[in-house]
Length: 450
Ligand SMILES: [Zn+2]
Image 1: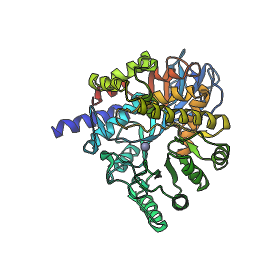
Image 2: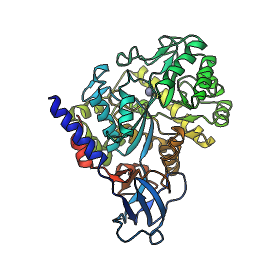
Image 3: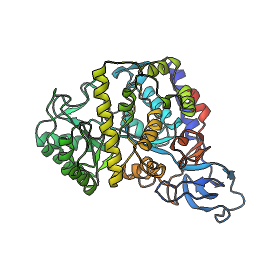
C-alpha cells in the first residue's frame, strides 16, 4: 500500500516535472502578455531553460536551426492563472475535514488547480503544522508537481474569531494584545511563510473583532520581514480600519454594505489589493440550477475532475430554501457584486481570490467560475486577465511570474479560443506549460483522487 502510493507519487512527480528541453520556439499563437498590454497576433517566443528569452512577432524572433519549433497557429497563449486565496487539504471526494489534511490530499488540490489552468496558489492561513511549508519547498527543489504552492502558515485572529468550522479548529492564533500579535507575526516569519493572514470579523457576534490597532501592529511587524498582510474582512466598519492600518490586501470584500466613497478612496490611496471572492456567495443565491452550471466546458472540466456523487451534491445546493435565508444570502451577494463593480470602476487593484477549498468549492473549478463572475460585475476580459495573472504575481511578490515577457518564467496556457472575446474561454485549455515543460494533462487527470 505504502509502496504503491510512493510509486504513484514518484510517477506523478516525474510526469509533472518532465525533462526540460534546452530551448524551444513557439510560433503562430495570439499571445496575451498578462500585464494589460494588447495581444500580439501571430506571435513567436523563445523559451530557454524554463524562461522566455525573446518575444515578438512570428518571423521577427529568430532561433538557431536546431531549436525545435512548436506551431501554435490558431491558438491563444496567456500566462497560467494565479489564485491568491485557497485552503488546500480539506476535501477528499465526498468527505471534508481536518482528517484529510495529508500530503496526498494537498497534492491532489494542487494538481486539480493545475488541471484547470492555475499555476500558482496562495494558501491563506489554515495550515496545520509544517506539511504545506515542506511541500512548497519540495516544489521549489523540483521534486513535486502541481500548482506552485505559497503558504501563509498559521493565521491570526482575536479569541474565537478565526475560521469557525470544526475542520479548522485550533489552527488560528488567538491574540488580545499588541505584543501577542507582533510575536505571532515574528514566529510565522521565522517559519518562512509567504504572507501573514489575519481574520477581522466578529463572526456574527460570537467573538470580538481584531481592533484596527492590532491589525496595524501586524502590518507594521510584517513589513519588517517583507511579508504582506492579508485580512479577512466582513464589515464596512472593519474595512475602514484595515485600510487605514495599511494592510496589503482584503481577502474578502465588505459584505454588510455597499462601500462608501471615503472607503473606496482609502483602498485606492493605500494600494490595497482586493479579492472579490464572489463565487462562494453567489452559488447560495439559486434555488434551481443556474444557467452557468451547464456551460459545456465547465461541465467537461468538472466531469474530468470530480466524482458523479460530488457533482450531484454540488448540484443539490441549488434547491429551494427558507425564504429568510435566501433573502439574507442574496442581499450579501448583492453587496459583494456591487462592491466589486465600484472598486473596479475606481481603479482598485483587484486580484483573483475565491476561498477555494471550502466545502465543494473545488480547486480550479472555483477559479474558473470566479473569472466569469468578475465579468458579471463589469470587469472587461482584459481587466480580469490582469487580475488573474500579473497583478496576482505583484501581490505575491513573484517577480518572475504572471507576465509573458523576456526574463519571465515560461508558465503558460494554450487555449483553443480567445479569452478576450469571452472570459469563459480560459476553460478551453489545449496545453499547459510550466517553466517551458508541457504538463501531461491526461496523466494529471488520471492521477486525481475523486
Ligand atoms: Zn479563506
